[in-house]
Image (cartoon, rainbow, N blue to C red; front, top):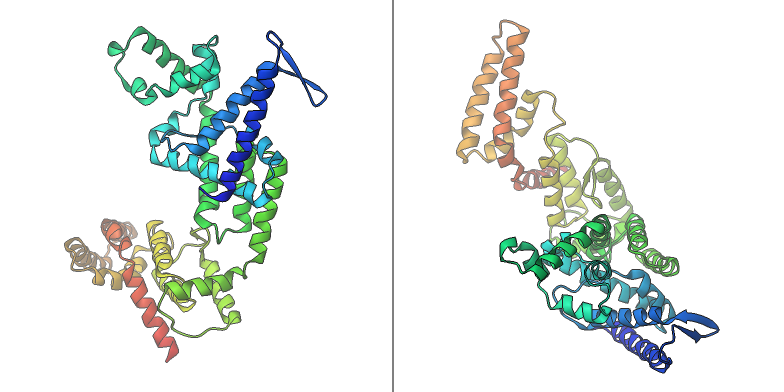
Length: 401
């Protein structure tokens, strides 16, 4: 547990002791308490004590089912804590990370995140909230939901019914809760050292949806933006990263040359978002891969790009004969696979038939047959990213001569 978390737990413990002292000193039968010039309801202070205890338990427990969702409550205590702003950000993201681990590790919880306050009101509104929480934590909720009705006791049937009602009441809220956690996972945790301005916008939206206070969001976004601006220009950082991850340095490039090549790559493919900008022929894919190799983009990223382009289909081709001609080298490279060998023979025969059509309708028929044959081996070809890499290396060597 890092220092920021430990400091925050200590602050929460002190706050809990202060609240408990107020409750203890309150005369029997009183309903309001006068604190700092304001009358507060005692039941509200008791709820605050319970919420503080839940939060402290969340930080201290390794319980597999531990998920925390009251971000407006924790925002209040983070704002008023003596922690530095970066420490406050670390605490909040620690909570999100811990939640996300549980949501990913236990998929069944995606549809079963209980709001205990709602369940308390539905099942046992007269029971003390603290005792009710203890009671629920002793139950195996997933097992109870999945048991056959005929083997449940009347009490279990009632509890099961109320759990399902509570889940239904908050179903949309829970879906959003899961979605925004995934936003932060995708746009921050997975790219903590190379997030972009666009990622920061996603993080900001996610924090708002979670209920984090405006003051904290503004401060956290400011920190993220400052850190982003302090980094080297993204192209230069990619040079450093790729040099350590990729041994193939075909040529020494200046920053200007690197940037020019990078801009050309972005005409075809968005590396940041793994997004195809335009449909590419096989020749263009090989050229794109050669550009990536020149600026030492990691091989794992290049392979990801090749597979991404291939799996999105051959939409650059309207004529299957052109597709066959362009992909003939890759087909031959995979001709040891029986299905590919059969397709090559079949297409060659079909191309021969194209030269003797009696009418346009027959010509179109044979073209469609060629397209159908290519479809049979597309999955096999799509999995072969080595061919484009090999051809791209040959292209670079040819250019350097």
